[in-house]
Image (cartoon, rainbow, N blue to C red; front, top):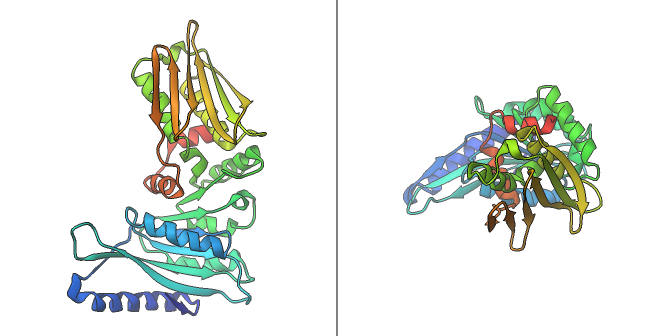
Length: 316
């Protein structure tokens, strides 16, 4: 990693020199393949968070090679500071390295508003731009607004917000202004939705027979995760009365109970990251997919176009 003056033209030139040097160094061991499918801009919370982002981006690049631009506030000076880096890996059984490039920018006292204009020439031409806004503060109006026009998709995480309804209103306003938004707290319920959808595909339940659905969440206040799940059920089962209730346990989804005129079925969070299905002649456990940050981002980076299912749940 090397420090460069924050001038877009200089950064791009130094990236070219970095690739040329890497190609020369690896010429005898198989060479280097430069890979890029998007520009991934990550707005980190602080310098320590930026280090965690570096590790996560290194994993993401294996399936979603990109030019990563990691932004974080801080620094003692008013000027911007930038460093360039490369992430490389070797596919199994191959001698040639695959590499993606990155730029880490410290905003200094000027903040992200000054960063936005520098990012315009740093985007990879003709490829999508994804902006990942980290932390609960990203869902407050103001701090990152200047970055939004640069992105084709903006990813948030409402998992730790204090007010779920305010966070959802913020996302709805962005969507109403034509921004394509995503929320990792929605992505966390993919496994729950898959289990429930499978029950309908298996005819354990018939959609038209479900009269009521009760979504139970843990913690003192409703989360966006519970709001999303209830909204998804409401849009999928328009004939059912959907309610939310608070239960025991830590914040997060605890269970959903679907009732027909003659029976009921419950999906409840069990141990070992499983859900337990019981009722309507079914009784089994199903393993939920990984909820790691890397896994959630892998899923969202695989959806760069519209996500109509999420958009319906967001606006329901």
